[in-house]
Image (cartoon, rainbow, N blue to C red):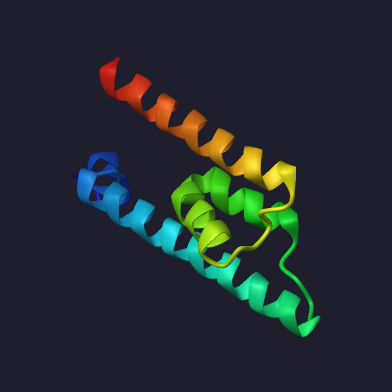
Length: 100
């Protein structure tokens, strides 16, 4: 194989995909904790759009776990419905592509 050719099968191996989902969910959990700490101190906050982007990138389990662990954003309907909706949509999409 030429040096400049990318081997996508190696990059997107099951092991790398699992590592990615673990890391993105840890990031999701961490940013919910961090935003809660900043809220308590009245400091600069993490934009809500960033929280949704992390969820959309596969970090839904982490952001949902962080939301309820730290009781953060649980009064905002957009988060209470939005995070699980995005996460379920991603899971259904992954199952669809696995079955297909």
